[in-house]
Amino acid sequence: MFDLDLWREIFQSISKNKLRSLLSGFTVSFAILLFTLLFGIANGLENTFNSFFKDDAQNSIFIQSGRTTKPFRGYKTGRKIQFKNEDFDYLKNDFGDKVQYITSRVYKSLAASYKNEKNNYQIRAVHPDHQYLEKTLVYEGRYISAKDLQEQSKVVVIGRLVEEDLFAKTVATGKYINLGGIQYKVVGVYRDDGGDNEERMIYMPISTAQMIYGNNDYVDQINLTYNPAMDYDEALSFSNLITKKLKDRFNISPKDQRAVRVRNMAEASKGVNQMTSVLGILILVIGMGTLIAGVVGIANIMIFVVKERTKELGIRKALGATPKSIVRMIMLESVLVTAIAGYFGLLVGMGALELIGDSLKDYFITNPNVSTNLIVGATITLIIAGAIAGYVPAKRAARIKPIIALRDE
Image (cartoon, rainbow, N blue to C red):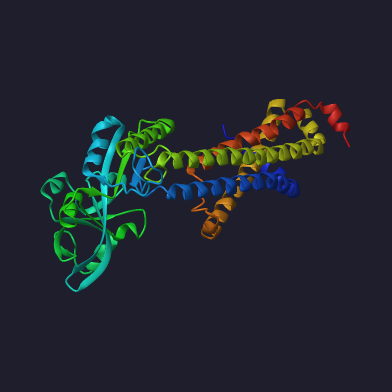
């Protein structure tokens, strides 16, 4: 039941001892402020690391070819390794359910035009699965389909900025653009979180590019995603197996690092996750340390308050106040001061992060912020901390004998 008189006494006690209340509140405010800033900066660093991978699926493996640097099985150095459609089929079929999505890439650079608008763009000829590896978000029309590959269709999917460049006054889907003198139908428009460069790409079926721009079955790169059920170690073992198999397939020395290059996002993700985990633990330890220091500070001040109010508490007990009521009064005062001061520190910390957030980008800190869960957790922690801080002095106050208290000077 709400006790108005009790709360009136608590507020009167706080207002009569402004300096003591400010000092006890400051220790908690500073602790929560530092706690918020540290976690905000940690989240900002994590946002920066995550931005490096937001353009591609995190379980991606990129396979590129180069030239041999070591002689092997009668082959000389300097031999160019050229991937073909059969190598794509080999990886897709022989590794079964270990492969989630897979695509080849052929790169071209062509002039594109529509009516009087013209510009040069990078062309990527791909398989339909490429949409999932690149996290391509089609918002008009559709992506490259299996039917497009089978029929070697002259269709393209263009980036958002390509549409803005060439189709400023109309919708691109359904229109035809000229690529290097050949007409292609625009079947879709996409956006990509990778930035402007990614949104100035044009995608076409790989079979179409192979037929028109070389009349061969060559591919420049093969990308795939491994089964998400794999953990980091399994994923790294899988990419090592791919490297070994491809080197055997092309008669490349196991020690040759340049002829076939396999880059697994799991390796980078594992390193980033380990670093952010260590950073999170470090900041949690520092943050909890500052919070504990604040709680100890307010506990010490509450002990001093109890000593200062010994005579008053003795009079209360002489007039019939129970030990339970005294414990409750002191603990509630401690909780109230802690909660208000802590919430103030939280608001100041969040405001500081909002104010200086943009200036921290030079230090690889992007959008520093604190989550709602952290705010709720911090609030609960404050209430518990205030109760703990006030409990010991409250128990001490409850044990004061009225006759001793009244003699206190």
